[in-house]
Amino acid sequence: MVYLTRKAEFSASHFYHNPEFTEEENQRIFGKCNNPNGHGHNYTLEVTVKGEINPRSGFVVDLKQLKETMSREVLDALDHRFLNKEVPEFFTLIPTTENLAIAIWQRLSPKLQAARLHRVRVYETSDLFVDFYGEEA
Amino acid sequence: MKAYLTRRYVFSASHRLHSDAMSDAENVSTYGKCNNPHGHGHNYTLEVTVSGPVNQKTGMVCNLTDLDEFVHAEILERFDHQNLNTLSEFATIVPSTENLCVLVYDILQRGFRHAHLEKVRFEETMMNSFEYWGQNRVIE
Image (cartoon, rainbow over all chains, first blue to last red):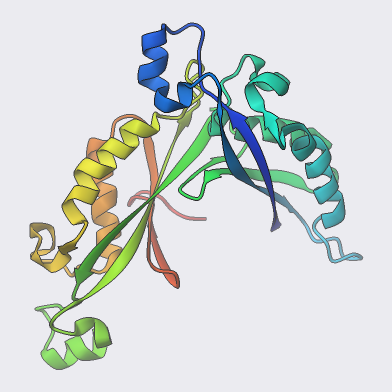
């Protein structure tokens, strides 16, 4: 089994707010991330796929195909968007880095052909990242 | 859905690698320039990885504020701008980054209650790093 990782970057804005919470609770739990006008990040996405090396091509996966899938399924939808208002998953789900990693997994996983998705890593800043391996709990 | 969250922190400290169980010659041959009696310093990068189910209401594994507060109070306040050899934790053990890594893991394991601790990773310089997953973890 060989693991291959491809990186991409996108920029987006978001804010954290749960309508089930009171204003005070939203403030206390989410702090400055609760500002309803949103704020932005330059996100770095790392997609790791795994598979056996194809003896004819020497590839685990066609990198061009992986790049196109990432662009079509993830970057086109998220890059330069206000996540809460423009990305359907986040109309109801809070666009934390955790939920972003899960949403990206769900967008990519059914679209990959030769290789299987191993990990989605999303850096919100260089000092904070989330890994999702598709585990239910 | 289970996710893993990693947060990085930076602090600076000095240390000297020296074991009283070894002769001076052995210390020099084992630790080389790290055995310099006056010590030397590093900018340590600490990575803390915690895991857990993503809370449906908050969208979080744990609130970063809780993790930051704990790490600041219990780790950075304790070690930042210190000479590690002078601290009681290192009275009898060598303040290697391996031992520092295990010590910080144990502090988090004992005191941090907001998510499951997975791993502590230290970068001593850009060229070397150390990880500790707890003594029960077998890396496959």
